[in-house]
Image (cartoon, rainbow, N blue to C red; front, side, top):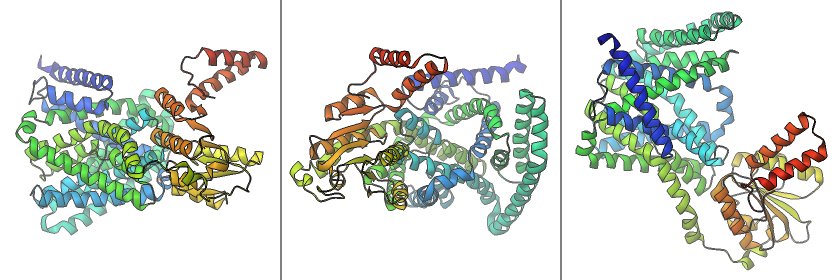
Length: 571
């Protein structure tokens, strides 16, 4: 029966992970939170369903290696170039400032040792890529300004984890010879990188090409796994962090033509073992630790919240973005991420953290993850009220006569709020039609592009009535609100209607409740890009299979009339 124990343990782990994930999904919470909580409930400190710590640790280590391998596969130099200054400079600044302030909090608020405070600063400098991406996708905010800023900072954080994990074991064993040990480790790292680059340039394409040539998915997946684990063992034998090897192989494989196939094959396996990692982290948490230290843990959570929201807010504001974008970016990134668990476990292995302090920190991390979606929803609900109380409604008479970009003698124009992908296409169409327009955007990079092309533009938040007034809405043909951020769209429509009650307003929406709100606020027409894409697909399918144009038009019209989700006033 003992030979079946590992199989039984893994089966139980996967079953409880499935249960935790399903419960979290039903409650509309991040699935990672479900894994962590179910791990706490079923772990050795609670129900005790799983007690074989060796199997749990082995599965977790394998999951971490695959996680870092796929991070290397997914990160490219092109991505880093595309995220702009706020991503690279802002991301580095966020990590550095949060780490320093976190270390200061550990020393002066919690009275930990210098090493423990330093680890605390590093851990809280990271945010959860999986939780943030999931929330942004569910809210349709991946392409918003604050969404792009958060993703950019997360990319820098993921890269920084590798450097942190490499430094931890060196700091633990260096003692007084820290500089010598760092130099030796740097030499080993360069040697390993050189060997990996050589193998990646000459051996890897030949090896994977040979495997791919026989079209064997099993051999291809096995080869990728052996490469990943071989690099992990190689860096371990050289005294470096294991995750460094996995990350490096992922980076090198990214440069080959097999990168997409490798990522597609490895992702399901990675997700399974990463799931086991999160469950195992939950099993390390002792509910008794929270009960006995609840005041300390909640204080840590409040410190993390204040530090991270404050740091991200200040950084985003310093790059010229509005209070709203800075606040939403800070709230979205305030949680500590999944790599914080990896770093904490590495700190325990290196002797920096005691198991007791580690449990306290992990409890705080889990709470920040759970709070994230609730805090975002709370800020979304309260922000418009705060703005109305602090700025108030601007009377129509004080704005309609404000001299702005255009005067009453100039030709009527279309005001475009948001110069993203949709806005740019609209501008191209208006230029071809010879219709004057004015662009309003808060993203400095978008405004810079409009300035270089000598397009009429205003830099500012279009949801602000004073900014809208500068676009001379009283003499405008129409206002088009193109950005996907629901709060900003509603505020823009409301303020524009206050300035000019007769203005024609075309606004973008994603969810049905947004459409109802915008209609109530006075939007003339509404557009749902996903909704319209469905009809476009249907129309193209009819065309491809040979249906005549008149019949196509009739069928599409019938579908529009029959669709119960068609929003009032939509185009």
